[in-house]
Length: 421
Ligand code: EPU
Image (cartoon, rainbow, N blue to C red; front, top):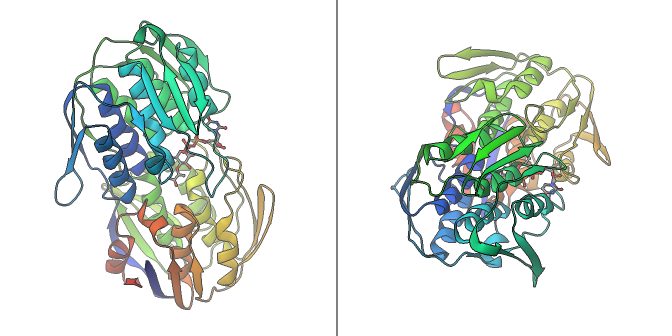
């Protein structure tokens, strides 16, 4: 199993480019199931989760291939497939559940493994299922699988209000509604840029979705869609992780291909801790001016502060000149990185949804264990800032969402390498 070894305390300077967004690429690849034919999706990140989605599409008789760099995906979807997502694949990647909406829409039936909980929370899919039921799907849960049947084979447009804003829930029901009979109105939808990007991709396939990027979607069902031809948006969370690296004391990092309007809540907080953030042509530059100032952070659905940046932001706050309060409102158990940051000398106390982060002047390198994707990114950032050597173990979590992070950080001056063990 690989580990990442970092000799920290070295200033980072230079330019790094964001890859395509994992959380936009995965539902877009699943959207291919909505139309027979040859699909092409560009700016796909070369990540373990994309490979898993490829295997899942492959298990349903679709041909999935990528160019040698792994950034252009081609999918051939045949007329008939087996609309089933097995436990073996769904258990390695919860996002696999986004095949449910397309399968039900096109084949009128689907069998998809329930994803189960994960390191950051219980993460039920009740809203996905209620939304599909509102469109006429009959759902049974048996032997760990969701079995969906649509009487008559076709979903029917309807009005549905989500109980909470859910990203993949909105994506699943939106995809299902594209092929439903008549108009669907979805309320309290997630407004994340990835949902908007998926809607753009679906409309290019011939779907009729209005209101994308707001909390109300109006979808007029069509009888068929044409194959995808889409460029995925840049990954705002990968970009945001590099922006936090730039805000660490003594650093000066420009992130290219980064959409500043997707990162407003983060940029506001980087300014609040004293970093200088400027828009440059095609990117964002961040200069970390000395020790960060404390600031409070509350995670929220977009456009609030993203839960996927909470762990990374905590690294900055751990080095601040004072105490900050972090409140995680999206997931119930997203503080797994805290114990590992404590091993590096951070002073953080967690009580339920709240973490009190008392800034310390410096962190010191230590071996640490990654528990989930964003926790791993936080540990890499902490290792870059810490004096001495940090070894981040269980790197497979990191590889699910960051394309060769060590190869992107090394040109900035980071002393970081991947070691096979
Ligand atoms: N929720 C329910 N019922 C549902 C759906 C969601 O109770 O049917 C709850 C969840 O348990 C959670 C909240 O609603 O407390 C929001 O969850 P959401 O459904 O929005 O999360 P998700 O769609 O499963 C996506 C991203 C996550 C990201 C969250 C929140 C993908 C593939 N995943 O997950 O990304 O944290 O939205 O923004 O898009 C990551 O990339 O590291 C990651 C975990």
